[in-house]
Length: 386
Image 1 (spheres, one colour):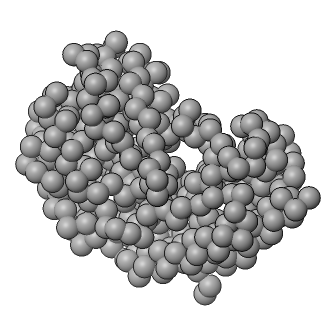
Image 2 (image 1 turned 180 degrees about the vertical axis):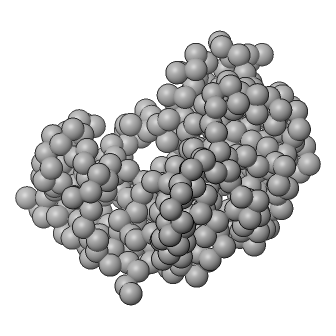
Image 3 (image 1 turned 180 degrees about the horizontal axis):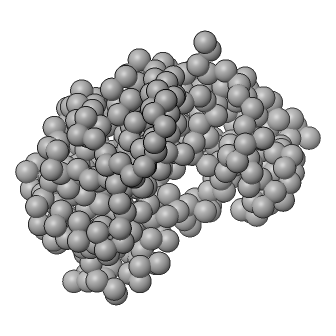
């Protein structure tokens, strides 16, 4: 079976397709925005769910110890990070975990550091929980690499600053933070007693260098970090609504669990448990092929942008998201979005939706069959020529 063949999704309830009219004003766009893949979920996951459905009762079930152990082993093999079972708990999503952690570890009116640009729920979870945003702008250096300014960040901290939301690897810019960068950031947080909530949902889709969990750097950072993990991005399983939260610190874990029980996350759904275990147990070979496929797609985008210098592209170190610099087109953000929708027939994520520093950019999801990516680039080529 061709694991990366074209699969028609427009007749399903896929968010990426169903919301085209609402988001873009037309269904006549190729949607390449929301971060799920137009690639089949691994057969090992599908088969495990099919096997479970042979049992005629789908009642309340708890997540099995085998499922947690499968993720522990995956993290040990893939990231050389050893987790203990008692550190882990179920969550329906990373965003739900962020909100829960914010409420558990801070008070209304406290400040939370967020780096701009970033995944939009980082902003909304802070605001919706009545905390104040400290926005730290990520800036590109002379090589086009995004970096934070540790001295400038230190100057933004006040006595009310309680949390830092870290996106690692980073969505949308595709950075894999280096050991030195993470050490500097972690040291700053420890000095100011700032807890780190680290969203590492993209940590398995890495091209170079290797992903390093910030909690792995020292015992102090292990005790100061809440890690958010899951198979949703890795195995295209977002529809199963399952992730985990890893909290090594007993003190932080007790605070988080109190809030988790208050909002009653529960233990998830039976088919999600089965899919989770199957992915981490039997999905390694599929994952290897996926990364190879995505790497090939990156090369295609890179070559295309070299031939179309008005759109700049720095290959991501991680994620399946291309952060396209379109500032040379000379369009305002609204005009830029309309150009992609009306002229190119493409539904991308506007850079401005990721924060002020995203102005002039568009985010393209390249986790698609190669033929789909090439068709999209052909559309963009024609729009630019027109």
